[in-house]
Image (cartoon, rainbow, N blue to C red; front, top):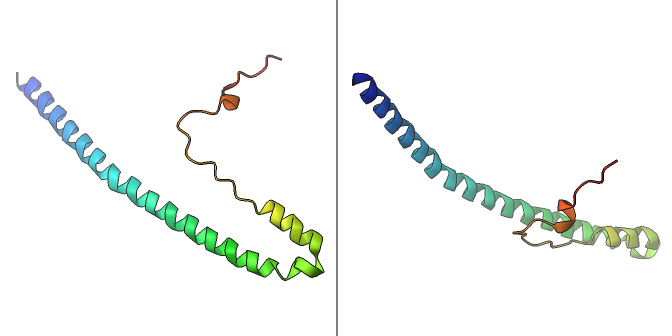
Length: 94
């Protein structure tokens, strides 16, 4: 029975370790989310600065400016909870 007690004790230790790891995961995800928000805000500020610089080309290089504005469109795809049906299409048999 000593072997069973040792195994039981090992299982309790493994369970405690799993709980500790799960508890530590929340703050890590929260910190990562906050970092993403900060990075997106920084990226937005940089793009706004570039937009102001590009206004110099509005008159002299109209084609270049229009190309920049066309490429500069930001698509807010939002949050998806379901997979895109187009991405789930079965590959064609060759």
